[in-house]
Image (cartoon, rainbow, N blue to C red; front, top):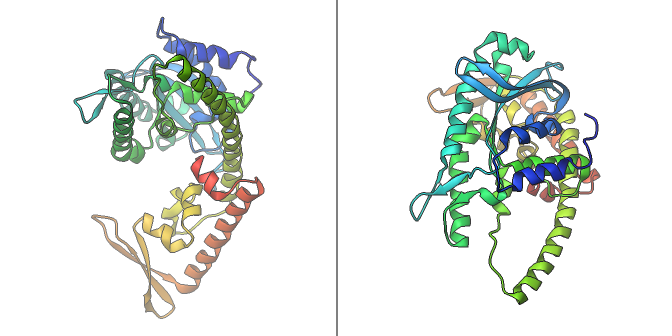
Length: 364
C-alpha cells in the first residue's frame, strides 16, 4: 500500500475524540491503512480483497478482508479471509454492574452477537467464500470487534484504582473463556490509530491489542494550578517515553515477520504436528526451553522411561480422548534437536535487532 495522506492520523484521531457525533462509517475508511493488523497473527504476503456491508442471510457484516498469508509452511499461496464487526469510537466497552464487577455494554453485546452470526453465515456460504478467494470455509476466520477508545473503556463512576482493577478482571475473564478460545480480538479505535502511526508516521505508542490498553489505562483527575504544572511535566515525560516505546513496538513487528519466515521452514509430523499452532507463537517458543515443555501445553507427554525396543511412548491426555502413540527414539531425538535449533535461531533474530527477549515478550 502506498503512503497515506500526511494528515490521515490527525483526521482519524479527530473522529475518535469527537464528542459531537458517532461516525463509525467514516472511521471505517481508515482501515485500508491497517490491512496487516486486520490479519492478526498471520503475516500478510499479498492483499487481495476488502468489502464493507457484505450481505449474508443474517444481515450485513461490517468489514471482510482477504489476502495471501506468508506463514503457512505447506500451502505457500494460502488465502485467509477475516470478518470484523465495528462500533463507533464514542461507544463504551464496559459499564458498571454493581460495586464489584463490570458488564459489557449494550453496544459490545450487540457487536459480539452480530459478529458470530455474520461469521457463521459467511463461512457456510460457498458463493461468498469463493468471492473472497478463500478456497475453503476453514479459511474464513473470526477477526474481532473494533469499538470505543482509551477514554471510553468504562461507563459509570468508580474510584480510580477500583475502576482499573474491575476493568482488568472484566477483560481477562472474557478473554479466557470467550475471546482467546475462539481467536476473537477486542480492539479500540486507538489501537488502529497507533498501528497506522507506527507503520507510516512512527509517532505514537504501538499497542497490538486491548490488553495493552488496560495495562496503560489512566484516569484524568482535576488539578490545582501547582498540580497542573506537574501534570504538564508528566505529560512531557510521557510523550518522550511513548516515542521510545514506539520504536520498540515497530522493532517487535519487524521481528515477528523475520520469525514467521523462519517458522515456515519447520514442520513436525503427527502427533507432534499438534504443535503447529504453538510453533507460530514466538512467545511460547521463547518461554519453553525444551520440546517437552511445549508438548505439555497441548496435553502431550513424552514418557522416555516407557520404552519398547527402539520406540518411546507419547501420551495424548486431552480430556475425553486419551490416546497413546509410539515413535522411534531416533525420531524424537531429531525433533528435540530441531526444536532446540529453531529456538536458538529465534533468539538470535531478536538479539540481532538489539532487543532482549524480555523486552520482546513485554511488547508483544
